[in-house]
Image (tube, rainbow, N blue to C red; front, side, top):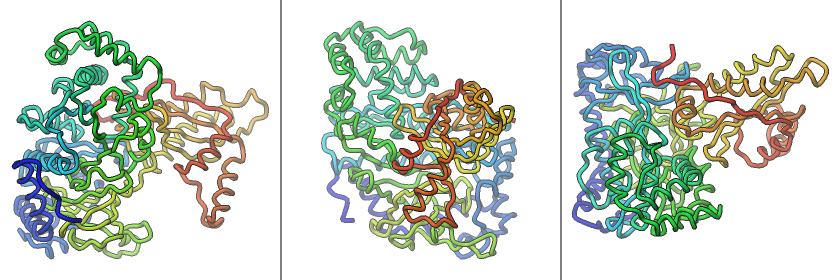
Length: 597
């Protein structure tokens, strides 16, 4: 990639110079970062006693003595911190909170330890986004950004530390709540609306303010593509009330949070019948194609993540936006913030992220034939590659060592090297390891889906029925998206009266949801970002037809296995054409912010 370009202002020039410096010296920066992490955490129990590092800060000793781990490997140490042990277990600095992520074997959230200074690193990465975007889009300081941002419910561990999603942590931080004015980062959403824990009130206030500023909006976004589609669906459902409030200069009593009402009152200072008429004319006809560009006509791009599981939403976003460009700007997770897209206006299928070498110490586990190299079964050691030594075209699993004390931790992201910017590699996000289904922040793997099917199918025994086979898909054509599970049933009793009734199959839907992880259940019960799970019963012999189809396309009959999730449209069409009944979960699964016992 060529040099980034000419900065829009002096502040941008400083940030772009920092990117150049970091990427030009990626190897040396990584060496410095590792030494800083090992020095900072040298007295922590994990490095000092478990790894016997002896205060060493060089790569060779680190690689020789510190093992590559998964969450389950360090879970005992994390649990001790969560239970209130304040000694230096993983980190030399105090753990201030846990950032939650999905995916433990028990179906509950992972707890990722973090320290106060991590917020400074995250803020630094955020500060690089707009200087890069300004290279591609002019005049973003002349308007506003309509971003739908939300906090989620949080809990406290037994030791009293907050446990919450990474973005909830950031939005509640001093860095976000008391951020300095920046003409390139002016949002239509009042901070009080973003911080409101009630999903309806938060969305309503943000949408109302976004409509009020419609001609000043230059970019529209959410963190994930699914979140932006939820906002569009909200507009479809509530445009009449929104138009009424704008026409009358009032705020619906359904928004009762005092801080939100006060913040909206500062925006909605007078009735605006003309604006209300525009909203009504655009929404009343039921034509939602290009609605984003019609309601916010000066929008230059959508700012959303459309890589990985979010790629499934691209056609729907194109429909609602009228073909506006989609910018993927940043790559991050609960464990660590990684890097940014230095070509943010590229096509979604061409997105690559450049890892910023100052964020953490990065290593990469090569994938061979889709599997991580090294094997627990053979005893072969895992051969990790340093950041600056990865090879273009190859795929790797990401492994991180963080300032907060995670050492050689397997994140589970599979990345492919697409090139280099200076000496820093650029990666395409390929997939999340072992994830079958995902609508938003949920991640359901094959083992979890299997357990859910087993739990639900047990309810069919009284009818002499069982599940012969199953597969699934993430249905995203509806908003919100939802899980669809295809079941082929075997009913051993004769007669139609012995076929499981509608109520029984609906109960199976709910039982599957109850078996899902905490992130899924929160998305269903509290956030409304996932719709009710659906079971589609297919006629007998459907899965044999599925196998015949796969073999006809070249699959080996000896190696064929039923895919537990499908995305290939012809296969989905085949399955849907064999459906004899569709059933939805009749209620939301149980969820509370506190972990289940």
